[in-house]
Image (cartoon, rainbow, N blue to C red):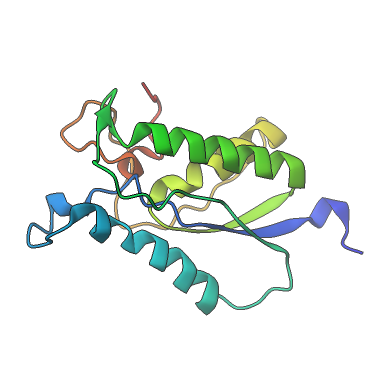
Length: 155
């Protein structure tokens, strides 16, 4: 049986709605379909990452590629909020001490960070490996939530 203080999990979170790649890749015919590449990325990471023997959990996400809508400065806010709530509920029920997140776009880290920050209060560390700072805010020029994952305020 695993030591409770060492209860680590692998969380596969293929969220795609926070990304809006069509802004940079204008050649795509269907921007929503192109953004769903983040789903494939999460699954590929899970396939390629070495098996640590830890339990693996999958956050349920919507793959409905409906019209993408900006609400409160955030594209697809409703789907992101629903998926974040589902992830937080899942993590609360599992109760891990550590989480390795294999995500789609960057905002897949928000729920694990939130869970761990609540669990450890002022004694939490985050290792963020990314190609950009993820500190934009709702209402900035870019409405993709993945670029807001580390921002100090969410509107």
